[in-house]
Length: 468
Image 1 (cartoon, one colour):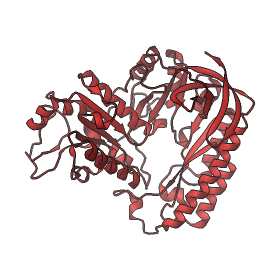
Image 2 (cartoon, rainbow, N blue to C red):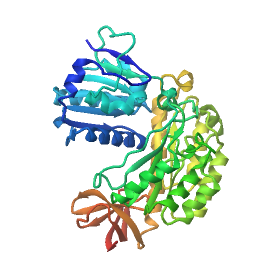
Image 3 (cartoon, rainbow, N blue to C red):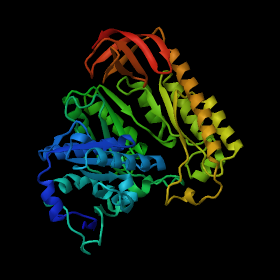
């Protein structure tokens, strides 16, 4: 019989059987699902486990404990985690499976009921996951005692009790070429379709001095590019003394660290202020890449979604980014099939996408999330209609991306080599977020200058003209 823990803090040892097992663990594997912030969380867990003497396994089949760091932004994200649990339990039945992350925070009992799951750890307790696994006396048992017939241990608390953000991870040299540094977590927005605020908690920021220290440590470890990430990155600083803006943090990193390239992950349109756009355009150390979530081009649907901008506000920000940075990659998230989305609403979205200088899109079909306001809306768009709208936007996005890539044929572009080598070619990423393949085997984490010879839907092709 397992116990169910409903905790807000950690203090004393957990269940004796689990602790005894934990003391024998030597190999672990962490699998991340979802966004860059989740990847950063997973890296922090890996670091904490290695600091306790555990060894990363090559894959789940070689591990004694597997941590699934889950996403719950869509129903398919939940399904991906459940499928992974079943596959791992089938292929490595002796290993213990621990599920954490957003799905674990939202539906812990649902996950705990699955065969093979040993523990479910919500986001509220993700920061003590190494203590839970290693059994080093940091996690308290529930005040109410054991839960009858609970199939797995559940560690869950009030995510809204978290008001500070712990330090972001520093990866070991060579682990990745472009580490994600999470400097913000949580969200104070209440979009009608989004469950993330309920499972991530309020917006909270890593202080400037801590971010500077983490970035400089990454630079000293040999990284050339660092990606700043967060759940609502543009809101960084609003919870800190003096309420600094995100542009303040970016400027501090440029002034106080030797980072060669900063890449900014997704930032909401209302947070692309003129100051931030000027920094993006004016510094060669900031990647020319802006991801600006759209969701819908219909004013009516944006209001139903409870988004905080109108289509014309959005268009103004994107056009200002393009005017300031003519070669920048500009991407967006677009949702189709939101409850009540009519043909006219979709036509407005399609028209806005056609008009704006996007270079790529992430197109999603609406997925009802239990606990959100949109899940109660009754005007459901038929799945075949949603699928068709999704296809239309994906095809439009592919055309825009190909046209953008073709504009660089014949030019020389700087790119960072990645840990990808296949078919006799090395893959690299340009400053403006284009995949580039060059013949030959080049070490990862090197800047190259490449002459672009071709552009296809798969990316750019070229030859290396210089390494630096």
